[in-house]
Amino acid sequence: MTNPLTISTEVNEPFLARRTLLKGAAAIAATGVTMNAALAASVTPLGQTGAPTRSTAPLPLGPLPGSRYPDAHLESAKKGPPSFGPSGFPAFAGTMAVERVATGFRWAEGPVYFAAGRYLLFSDIPNNRIMRFSEDDGHVSVYRQPSMNSNGNTIDREGRLITCEHSGRRVTRTELDGSITIIADKFNGKRLNSPNDAVVTADGAIWFTDPAYGIGGFYEGIKAEPEQEKKNVYRVDPKSGDVKVVVDDFVEPNGITLSPDEKKIYICETGFTDGPDNPSHIRVFDLDVAAGKVSNSKVFAEMPKPSITDGVRCDTEGRVWCSVGWGDPNEDGVRCYTPSGDLLGKIHIPETVANLCFGGQQRNRLYICGSTSLYAVYTSVQGAMKP
Image (cartoon, rainbow, N blue to C red):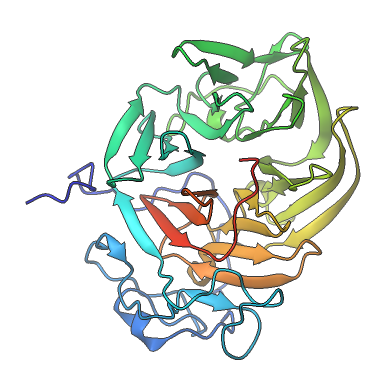
């Protein structure tokens, strides 16, 4: 019998590089991470020199192979036994396991959780669709197709879906009656590049990033020449609808999120995809919601090149959770940082991770978009109210 959670029976193609990272890169050094040898069934134990050797057998749904409580896929940066205190990695608990809950996608991205319906929406960009994962019974269905090669999704303060579209080169809002409103598709009379990710502040303003990934080829959108000189971060005024640039010095702005008090805004910089001398990190800014401005930019956390971070979320205590992928397979997964930028721990996933969000009735289930599959793990924290 076919597993009802597997929505596609076609064999996934080998990993297709969305972006050219480095040509002729040197061999990746060991990360120094220690992992339980039980993971050897699917991946070389983390910390050994060289890239992991992955099993050719398809991963099953449910807990990842080799899982044993406490799950070795959850790695604390603090040495010694798992800690439940503020200095320990908050994903640790005695019966938490990383699970693969759905598969059959080409490139999963942009998750957002709708508590009212207990479902998760996320994009499958190359397949030009938005998927829906129902949390109550694990059912997976197509929410929208075509989706204009949607990427990032979020939810506004009225419960409406906000979507960044690659082939549409726009940001849209799905109204409660199902109709679609264009929020932004131009700046200074010229088309946007390919909006990537968005967040909504308490005043209703929509902040979004606009790199050029979606117009770089035909796999994730429609190939086109950029009309904007720079890859900007924009803000859409909630009353007038005016679009303005709030940051213009990114190489490639990507994931975006807010601190719980909305005094900080975090934005992923994935410029490293455009060249080895470009950055791969998260930047943090002071945020003035009322004025619609940011200031005091600084690097919050560096990523281990050649890996990049594509997506980012905060929990209620201000800790920062971000995706990691595209480089060293030993780094594939999720990282968690304190509000001051100290690494607390990692969640290791056997695929490149693009984005993530908190969901579940208690907002304590972390959903992880990992390339061809959707993963989930319960944490001992709650996601911030803002998506």
